[in-house]
Amino acid sequence: MISGAELLELVKNDLREAIPRPKYEVLIRPLRLQEIGENRIVLLAETESLKHWLQEQYFQQIKETFQKYLTKPVELEIDIVQGSLFQEGEQVDLLELVEASAPVPSPPVKRTVLFNPRFTFENFVVGESNQFAYSACLAVSQRPGFAYNPLFIYSGVGLGKTHLMHSVGQKILEKHQDLNVLYVTTEKFTNDFITKVRNNQLPDFHKKYRSCNCLLIDDIQFLAGKTETQAEFFHTFNYLYENGRQIIISSDRAPRSLRSLDDRLVSRFAGGLITDIQEPSFETRLAILQKKAALEGMKVTDDVLVLIAENITSNIRDLEGALIKLVAYSNHLADSGPITLDMANKVLRDVLPDPQRPIVTNLRSIINVVCDYFKVDRNLIMSSNRSKNVALARQIIMYLAREYTSLSLSQIGLEVGNRDHATVLYSHRKICDDITEDPFLELTISNLTKLIR
Ligand code: ADP
Ligand code: MG
Image 1 (cartoon, rainbow, N blue to C red):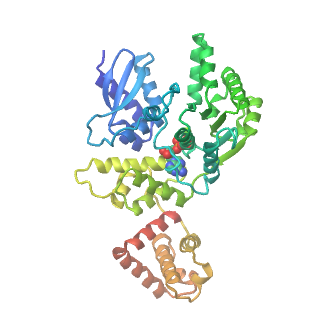
Image 2 (image 1 turned 45 degrees about the horizontal axis):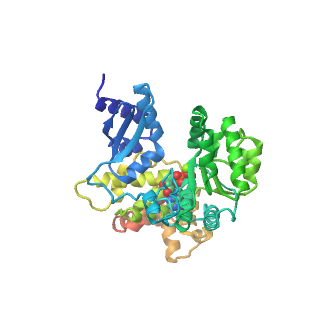
Image 3 (image 1 turned 180 degrees about the horizontal axis):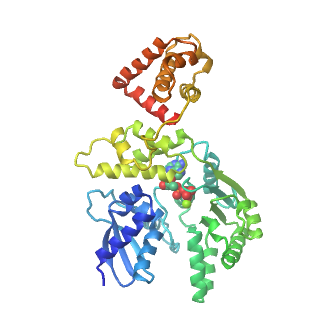
């Protein structure tokens, strides 16, 4: 027989191998055991946001790892440490809020899922990559059942589908507290169906899913290969659709690419509005980080956010993960000053490109990168133009060429508008000197260095 603490250690060891190290350090390592019963385990996270992240990302994996050692199914719960130094205000219990403010006579609507209070339209940063999906969701939340039905949203992982669905749900409930808005993951829908069939309670299942005014079903790609659940979903869909109820579906790919899904379903999906979310631009990534930092009251300077936004490009969840890791780290320092670039580079070592990696580059790509960065025409660099921006870009090109290519001073001079070697030497020295005094220049050089790798 092993103790609860030993069991938790075993589970943590497994998870350390299975998930990215920064996430392990921030999310898993600090977990504590609150309770271990016959069929129930309660873990403690330090803050509400850590709890939320655990539930979003690793809940199933943690649960399965416990089950592996216990060799039986268990219920897993994650709570927050009471009275923790890191506790962030009261948790909002939307269920209570909604029910407390609903008109008294109407029978209380039973809500099985609470929406994430952070996943609102107000907290969603709109950029070119998600503008269309955002507008469609907003329209649906204003006129559920009428604007676009069904609404189908697809994108790669971590780009905001779940966030938008929760936003719609919460917006509808703000205005229409009596409506029954149901958010489910496809996994939950499937499990519900299997359980109810097994227990001969199919009518309960129908009652639950057919009585809602708005069904938000997340990650529909997981219906692939589940023929019976698909058939059931098809009937649910038709019932809701024919009765003018709103349906929003999310998926990791477009309907036509959902190969193993029944054609009848795919054509139903295609009958409404289909919208996708692309990877966010640098500006959107930065804006998301700024918003997130402001929302959480984090003391982070823009250069740190730029560092993250530049290096984590394809997944907003990872973007936020890096920020949370930094904040978790600085929270644990005795001196809780602002997070510095230096600290960020250290803490985020695993997620940022390795600074030791040798740089393989040539002068042409340096010129291209610097011209793009400064929005300066290549011909101006080659010319004798001495305007401030052009002169600085030219000096930086010569500096980077000296640092990161094996060309001689004369060769560099020749390639940068036929200048002599002394000019190249002077430029290189000037940048070296200025960097030490001008943090903006330092940041510029560090950004450019990453871009030319
Ligand atoms: P998906 O469901 O597409 O995998 P999520 O909706 O779970 O992605 O988003 C992952 C994380 O990124 C969430 O914490 C979410 O709040 C955040 N996020 C995604 N898009 C945005 C955005 N445009 N503005 C602010 N936060 C965003
Ligand atoms: Mg999701």
